[in-house]
Image (cartoon, each protein chain N blue to C red):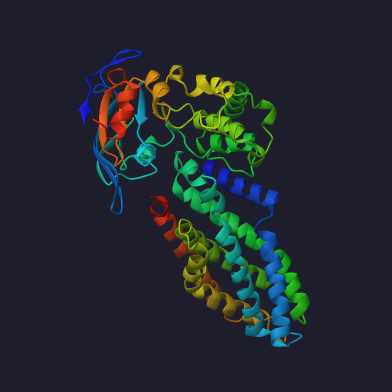
Length: 222
Length: 249
C-alpha cells in the first residue's frame, strides 16, 4: 500500500509541477468542442448526439495522457527503480490507473461546464452525466494503463496506443453513451434503462481491472 | 577460459561455495541472433568484490541487469543472495543496489523527493534520518530541494549513489559508478560504494588497474560475451586482462 501511495503521490506531484497532461487534455477538449460546434452547425445538442460528442471528446483527450503515462518511467529509469524495489507490480498498475482517473476527473471538471455552455439548453442531466463519465473513467484508466505499458517500449508507441486502445474501449463508449443519452434528452433528463448500461460499464471496469492486476507483472518483465 | 584458483579475499580466507552471494552456471543471454553472454560461470562470496572487465559490447551491462533481476537469462543458472533467478526475483529485489549508466532519478522531483520515493518503495522506517545522513556524506544536503533536472552530471551521480545505497543493500551492482565524478566527489562516495562499505560488489569499469586493485575476483569477458578469465584478481595483470578481452593470446 505504501508503494501505491508513493507512486501515485509522485505522479500527481510531477503533474502539478510540470502541467504536462491535464492542460493539454483540457485544451484539446475545448478545441474539439469548438470544432463540433462549427462542424455540426448546431447551437444545441441533445440525446445520443450530445452523449457521443462529450464521450468521444473525453476519450480522445484521454489518449494524450495515456501516451504520456510512462514517459518518466521509460526515459528516466523509473521502471528499473521500481522493479528493483520489493514492490508488487499491481501497485504500479493501481497507482497509474488512479492517477489517470484523477487526470480525467480534472479534465471533466473543466470540459463538462464548457460542453454544457456550448451545446446544452438545459443542464439538469449534468450531475448524472458526471457520474457516468466517472464510471467510464475507471474502465478507460484500467485499459489505458495496460495499453500504455504494452506500448511504452515500442518506438511506435504514439501509433500503438490509439490503435490498441480504441477497439478495446468500444464497449465503454456504447455503455456510457447508452447511459448518458437519456440524461441529455431534449425534454429533460430521464433515467429509464440507465441502470442496465451502468451495470455493463461497471462490469467492464471490473474485468479490465482484474486483467490488469493479473497480467501487469508479465508486461513489466523484459 | 582460464579458471583461477579459489581464493584469498581481502576480508580473509573465504570459500565462495560456502556462502556464495552470486553463483552463475553456464549463463547465456541472447538478443535475437546476437549472443551477449556465452557460458559464463562464476562464484562470488559474500563480502567480495568482482571486477567485471571487457570491451564495449562484451555483455557487462547485460550481466549486471541479469543480476539485478531486470533481464532474464536465456539459459543457465543464476543465483543471487541465495535466490534462484528469475524464479525468486521477488525475494531478492530490495536487497540489491544498482548504480548504472542512468541515475534512475526523476528529473522533475528534487533530490530529497526522489530519495523519499525510493525509501517508500523499500519500506524504510528511518527514511528522513537516512536521507540526511547520506546527503551529508556526499555533500548534497544544501541541494536536497533542487530538481534533479537542474543538477550537473556529477551531482546527479552523487544523488544516484545515495539512491543506490539508501536501503543498505547487501549486494551492490556498480556499472561505471564513478563516471561523471571528479576526484573529490569520487572520494566522497568511496565510503558508500567502495570496498570498505561491507557489501558484496560487482564492479564494471573501464579503469582496469583500479578495478583489479579494489577487487577480490575478476571476470574478463571477450567481445562476444565469452569468459576469457575468471578467478582471483591477483591472478591477472591489467595488461593480461586487456589482452584477454581484446582477443590477443
